[in-house]
Length: 558
Image (cartoon, rainbow, N blue to C red; front, side, top):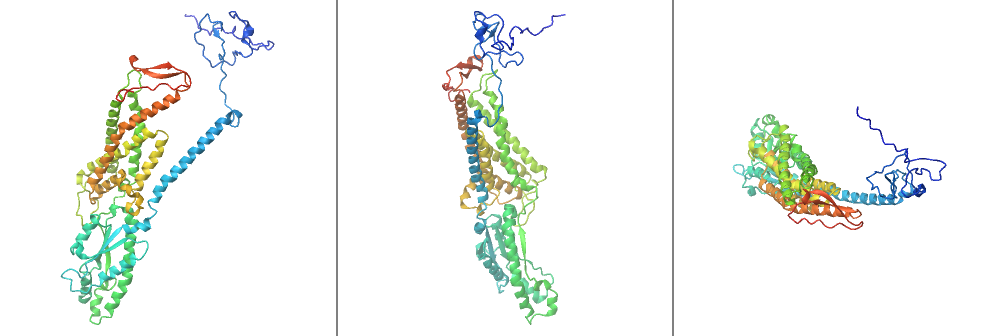
């Protein structure tokens, strides 16, 4: 049976005696020194122990007693916490209070400035509603074979529109002569589809003729709906239509019915040439006579499309932003020497670019698949541009791939910009950048810039604006500006990639500078020895002196 290992006997190291003038004096061999040499400041209390470490000590050291070094600082008092109002905390209290107040002031001013941009985008909506153009085109009695009729319906509608123009706030109603559209009502629909106007009011050429014919002949098949058409396209911007366009068009319809209905009914009932028996067969031609019909060329729907073109794109920014924090520690293992030499920094940059773009490729696919999983229709074919079409897409079964590529380019435009800024400003300011990047993109993408103050015209160049526009065009078969949208996103991605190496080298220089500053008060600084496979080596220096700059060369390793 092997001998049992007992703890070493240290009883001869400490003898505590209440009567001894030097409590805790040592009883034992002291090479050339008396026990009083230890003095009252040296206390070895075996009961309390010590936090210090006993290293190998030369045997001929005169300050060693029984292999225990007793030079000054041998015993270290353990750290003890204290109260907040302890006098020794006075300096740190002032420092913390100052830094807290300064950071609070910075955050308050920054948040106020950034959040004001989101509120401000809607500040002049009532004033800028005139930028939402609505074309009013009166074809009544203007086109053969109905040009012989004295128009009644068309002038009544234009009178109501003129009254609306005098009210505030109001849309930008523009009375357009029918020759501008070559006397073709379908051309007006095409203009709305092509975004030459947000909406249009069309008075058909036969509006008055059919109404008068109905009361004269007793045409029971007369339908009062459709002589006036309100043409809209809600998928272009559903909030603008729901909040501003549709309510005003409904007001026009009510005012028209209130003014035209009684006057028309009175004129019919006082016309002695009209037979009462005939009139009883066409009550709809007497009241209301004419009712506007709203035609939505591209309705917004289904409801699950809302996150695909609005709130869901915020998550696209956030995911692109946080991928930097997730993957940077993995990439940096190539340049943190251990069992391997550091990788050339320029190769690390190339690898990071490839890895980032590949990451965005797959993450954008997953993001796009979420929309597909919730049955946003990506397969219906394109539809007629002048007829209502629900769930039409721009490219049929190829729409999903185009939608995915738009999100992929968008992540490159949004995400690499975040990586560049993060390497320049560092923590904790990257969070401030994220707030700025999200709010400025959202403010100019989810709201119509036509309703915003002129200051926000820069929003036309922001990446998320073009992601939203391209996504709407793909999902709802809207007027296509896909070339412009992809061009802007490509430009952002190219600019970000061009700046990426510069930001990487700046970030490395900044980190080196911070490390040198931290090593100022140290007695040594660390370098990586290339001859020793990149192992860390400590080089001595004087306290208070900055270590030398580690020169690696522009294209060399870490």
